[in-house]
Length: 249
Image 1 (cartoon, one colour):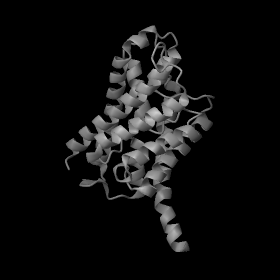
Image 2 (cartoon, rainbow, N blue to C red; image 1 turned 180 degrees about the vertical axis):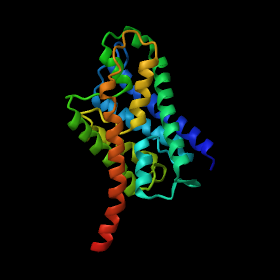
Image 3 (cartoon, rainbow, N blue to C red; image 1 turned 60 degrees about the horizontal axis):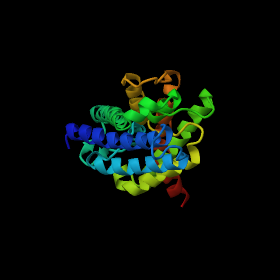
Image 4 (cartoon, rainbow, N blue to C red; image 1 turned 120 degrees about the vertical axis):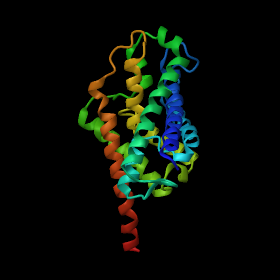
């Protein structure tokens, strides 16, 4: 498979992920929408369905949709990211680029869908919350720990059960994301994906959103570094656990 196909697959899949994921947050958070004040459970299920759709769209590339998943596969020692896609520097950077661009584009389309509601919403925090995550209680070390743990669960379970998101199955990955959200999403909003947070945050900074306020760049590194560390740990542990189990049996 060519890296061009990998790139386009990840762009479209991650764009679908953030369009629907940011879209459910917009529906809950923005003034005057049909889903306004729908609650966090609605958000977690919306993100789960967003992942479900994104995995189908990006099936050709293995549907990473997330640099932390790519890193987890790399650290785990996989020979291929997807059938016919060798793990090397060029393919790794191709996945990262596709994921980031797709996340940005999906957020832009979400803004277009909710343009009138962005115009009437007065709270800058609600507007930023559509695009990116933020902590319930701001504490750099603990926010980082939460993102590491949540992403570790994501990558460890994916690698343990199926090897890749497409191998595991879209429904199972979607339910996993819902489970992480309802269980571990309370402290930080569970980015668990550097592209999902950084791409839309860049869109928030660039788009002409009335009264949007700060993009909170001081916090922005946490939902990038935390998931990358968690993904790497997930890849390591998913490689070690079968060896331990085999040795003990």
